Image (cartoon, rainbow, N blue to C red; front, top):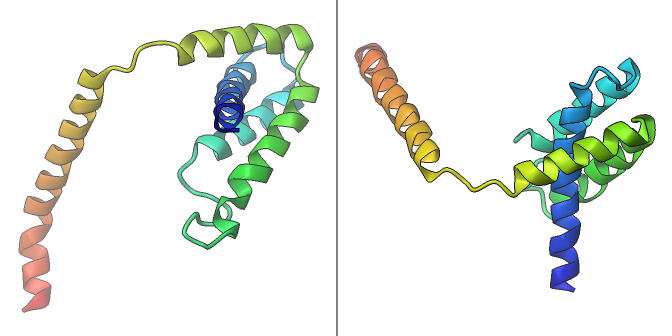
Length: 129
């Protein structure tokens, strides 16, 4: 059962990436591009319709809305374009993760946070008395 769930999650991830790629493909009709971009943006966005901390309902959108959106948009995209973008998405998903790039991004965010603190600290101290 766990292997089935992991396979399903892997296919969902691949299809979200494929929808993003199809939304940028000029062979995809404009209405399918808009729908694909919306579904991919919602699936990849950290902001959910129902926040994840809400018991039971929090993950409902992740388990129902995203897969149903994917199924709808897949029907709008030409089959040849979809298969090509799925293959590209599978190749992208198999690429190794760059830990150096992740460390660089964390470092940039830390530097930005420290700079923001140094900039805001005198103002906040004045407000607090």
